[in-house]
Image 1 (cartoon, helix red, strand yellow):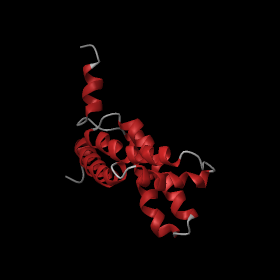
Image 2 (tube, rainbow, N blue to C red):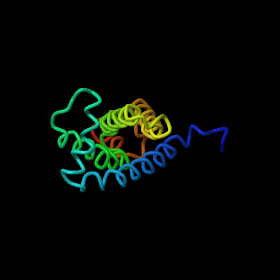
Image 3 (cartoon, helix red, strand yellow):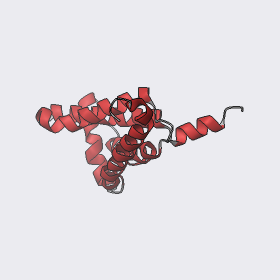
Length: 141
C-alpha cells in the first residue's frame, strides 16, 4: 500500500479536505453566529495592517471565511478561492498573534493552516469533490 500511494491520492485529499474543512466550520460557527461584538473583536486584528476602520466588517468576513470556507472545502466546492480566503485569514491571525507578543507557539496553528490552504490551491480538490464533478460535467463528451 505504501509503495503505490498514487492510486490513493484522491482518497487522501478527500480525508484531508473533509477533516480540515469540518474543523474550520466548527471553529468558525461561534465566530459567525457570535454577532457584531464578536466580529468587531476579530476585525480588530486588521489594525496590525493599518486598517482600523470597519472592524465589524473585517471580523464578519473572517468568520464567513472560516465557516463557509470550511464547508466549501469539505465538499470540494470552489476549493481554490475558498483556500485563498482561508489562507489570508490565517495570515492575518498569525500576524495578530505575533504582533500581540503571543509568540510562535500561539501563531503556529494559523501558520500551519495557512501553509495547508496555500498547498491545496496548487494541488486541487481531487476527484471526490464537487469541483471535479462540475468541471467534468461541463466538458463535451
